[in-house]
Length: 176
Image (tube, rainbow, N blue to C red):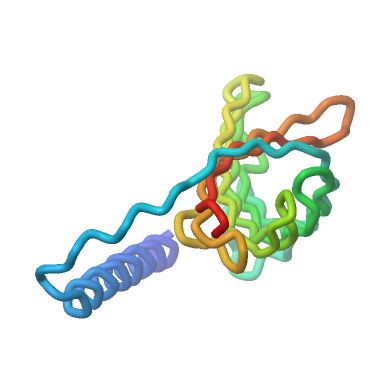
C-alpha cells in the first residue's frame, strides 16, 4: 500500500513538474507584446460509420489491485473515418454493485477523415452506474497531425446487437 502511494505521489510530482516546465518554457519563448494571431476559419462537420475493436488483456506487471484491468486497443474504422487506432485502457474489473464500473483510455487514430489524412488522439472516460452508462470521448487538444492538424471534437460510440458504430462531431481549420 505504501509503495502504491509513493508511486502515485511520484507520478503526480512528475506531471506537475512537466506542466510547470512547459508553462515556464512557453512564457520565456514568447515576446511580451505579441500581436494576436489571425483567426483561422474553422468548419464544423459530422462523420459517422462503423468500427471493429479488439481488446487484449495485458499482463499485470506490478501486483496492481485485482479489481483493475489493463488492455490494449486495436480498432479498424469504416465510413467517413477510414483508418486504424491503437491505444490502452484501464478499467475496473469488478465492483461490489452489479452493473457499476468505469474505464479510461487513450488511443491514437490514424487514417483519412472525409478525404483529409493524418492522426489525432482520443481520450475516453466511461462510467457505468448500476447499468446506466455515461461516456465521454474527446479529441485531445493539439494532437492532430498532417491534414488533421487543429482538429477538435467529440465522438459518440454506439453498440447495437454487438455491432459498434460512431458519430463524430468535429471542427477543423478550413483548407486553403
